[in-house]
Length: 291
Image 1 (cartoon, rainbow, N blue to C red):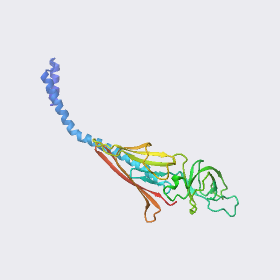
Image 2 (cartoon, rainbow, N blue to C red):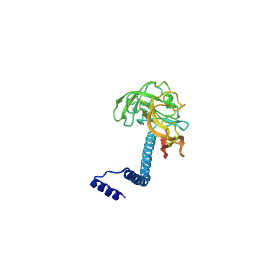
Image 3 (cartoon, rainbow, N blue to C red):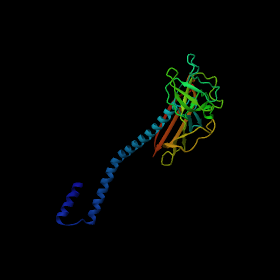
Image 4 (cartoon, rainbow, N blue to C red):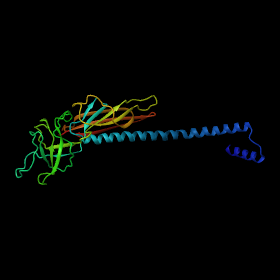
């Protein structure tokens, strides 16, 4: 058909005769039929391509969000994970840690062991450490509220080098107000949390599905300072956008996961949807709860 139309056009050009209205209508009808046939042939493949691309983008977004949350949970301060329902959870992040000297070195009079009776003690750190003034030292966090309420943390006032036979660094602490660390804790471990934005909260809000099959919710990461008491009374607002098109999400925390009950477990579910395409990913992360 296309060949015949081409020959007709060439013949008309040679004779110098233009197209009649009927001929134009026939050409338009034929081209419409050809275009419709091509569209019917290619449309499924085109739709499949866009659907696959949409699912890939949603999967990448959900996977990236879950990986980031899991990475931070694994490095959280022991026993610091808290949830409010299943829509949000928070924890205190760490930037380092090590072991402190528990007893004085009997052969060296210049050693410094952690003395919990002092208001602002100094102590030798026995492992390599790069502390910064203002960072928080947390020792023996055995409950979910202590570190938030300030019962077992104190800010670093300064640090100095010591003889290698005594340790790696000597830390001097700020005021502890007589509530620093449980006296029964003797394992000699401590963790460092940053002086700015040590508390991280992940919040899923507005989750649902629109009439067009697109998720209406968001997942945000909120970083802030200590304050507001020792419990997570409500999911906060604000923060940095981590994922959108959220149609469903759920966060569950078990503080005593496993036979030894020395690690907690955060279960995270995230479902994203766009134009009736859905992806649902789940992930879990252990947090060491042995202080």
